[in-house]
Image 1 (cartoon, one colour):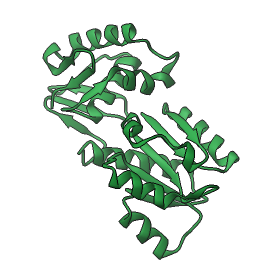
Image 2 (cartoon, rainbow, N blue to C red):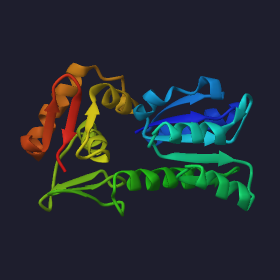
Image 3 (cartoon, one colour):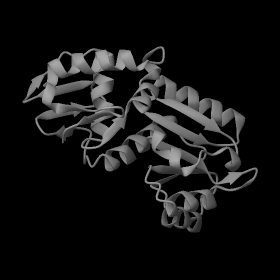
Image 4 (cartoon, rainbow, N blue to C red):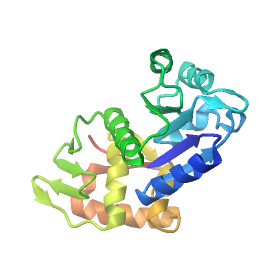
Length: 218
């Protein structure tokens, strides 16, 4: 999973990146609206953590711009504003969730998992894609009820593909999302891991889209 943080507070930004890394999640941190990526690049991220009060403007306006441009990435607002009106405005403006500072990291990680489940159209922490059953927190994958012996890389690979089952995940996005497990992967290494994973879950379940990436068949 790869997360975009837009937060101007130095201490909080650093703490968020450390907490995400400890949970096996990569991240990019920006401190201003003007540093935010263009909407065409937003699909590189699995979730956005967005502060409402930024040095060069309001995060709510940025949120509305993204949504009006067709951005569908889950967005969680981080803010010190605890009023009902602020929460309603943020959620009605396109946010998927709202968490008030200060917050406990464990709650934030739980909320990230929850919005990602909804995005992947999975109702619980047990994901089902055809004959595959994936339990992200238990690092368990079963095929037709039989547990598979997957390496950490293989598990993370099938999880990232499952997040967007039925859609193509670009190789570049996979390389970025798998980075927390070690050194960044080149495309050759990804191809090797995909080949190994195919042998374990069935070659027909992972389709190659030449020149783009891979798709887990739903």
